[in-house]
Length: 265
Image (cartoon, rainbow, N blue to C red; front, top):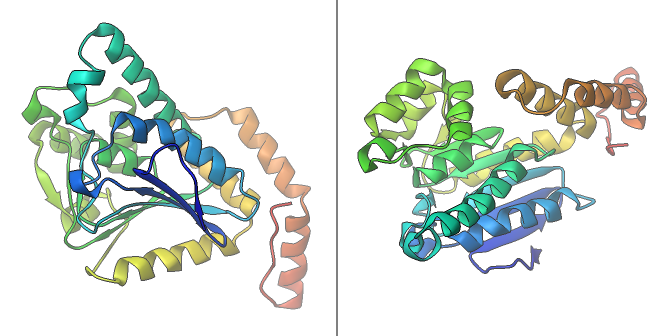
């Protein structure tokens, strides 16, 4: 089921327990416009508030790109002076905050170009699956600009300092296989329908797990690796999980030698 968004360049869809965020600007290889940045928090609010959704997938439309970067064609109109650049930055910061603090597990399904801001978006996902024909690049050093500090922090947490420096220093494009070897990608699949299959397998695993346990694991790992969130909130969630119906269901299912049926309560 598709849900209305503030721009047709972003698609929000729900399919059972899976929520989809689709960057829908294929004519520009899904380069992210101001309107698209503005829609990201809106869509995340919609999906995280949906009673059935337990996992989110981000993907690009058109089969040529996940996200090829920010839409530079808009910079003359939206970043032409200090005031407009400040407003643009505020919109960008809201999108990053929404992605960083999304309570549900997020998978980035990468098919094609994943450059610049596209890498920054994929870094905010918890898992990244890419087709063999995909390529990854942060070309800031070739453009004379700098990469956002928080995005560098996410990159370092994922691939380590030395590899992060090479990615940033060189500005090179890396194949999906090279990205997997660096830890930037979790799984590489053949082009075609294999991406859909791999994503479906992972969403099925996540949907079958206890939502409170998965949410706690996500918050704890993000806190340890990037300093996100508060330790007190993570500990409180751990206590909620111990007092939950799902914990009782998990113990009962183990005793009865059957698969548990978790509800997130």
